[in-house]
Amino acid sequence: MTLGPQAERFVLHFGEMGSRWGVNRTVGQIYALVFLSPRPLNADEIAETLGFSRSNVSVSIHELQSWRLVRMVHQIGDRRDYFESLKDVWEIFRVLVEEKRKREIDPTLSLLRGLLLETPSNADETYAQQRITEMLELIELSTAWFDEVQRLPPETLESLMRLGSKVQKVLGFAGKLRK
Image 1: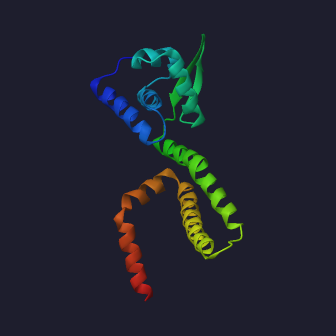
Image 2: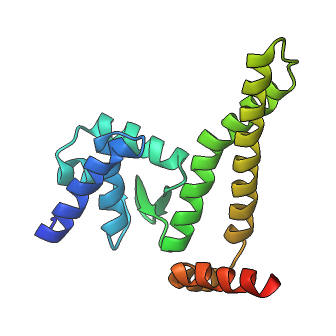
Image 3: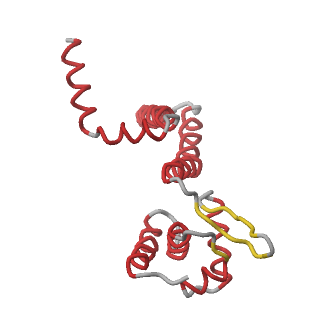
């Protein structure tokens, strides 16, 4: 596969962003390549296109599979494994959010809930527990809200997102009506 200038910039940028998202540069670049490809790619094609070792591609593909961002497909008459990304960008968004939640939010919720089971032994610990309670309530509220949003059909979610600051104006107007 040959990358044009636009695709090359996209792949390089995803590599740079990978470290900010918690994955390495190689994983980010491989994902970008598979995302842009109109057909499934095998590991040798990925390695050749990006100039990576076959073993580096293999490890990175496994990581992308663990994130559920790429899936393995097969082609008749070919024993090699091919990889493709999810096609629907809304589904990619949902999967990313679910995986981030599973890896980052859920362990934090477990820790906070466990900490609140302990009895404070002094005023500082009582204060700390109050702060932990506030943090737990915020995270639970936001995850419950996001769970509801995530159940919306993609078209509704897109419309909601396009509303942007208009939602704030509507809520502000509704608040004034209640007074």
